[in-house]
Length: 86
Image (tube, rainbow, N blue to C red; front, side, top):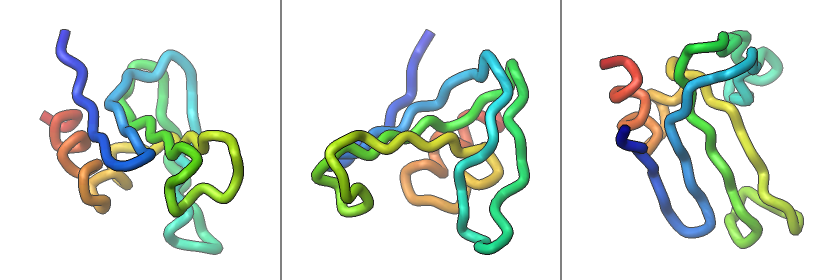
């Protein structure tokens, strides 16, 4: 089994298969967040921004669940989403 990972400074993203139901963390359409739910068995992108990344203001990593439909709109994550859709 191959694991696809996207990495940059203080940030990683990985394509994973859900074991339980998750809500998509994307809030681009504020005040209307993505309403997609990732169901068990579906693939999603798990992204982690570590302290030192410009999106993290604290001392703990920030974890996001990104559904495949939202991931296609982000550089780096779009490659992972394409793999999930194939």
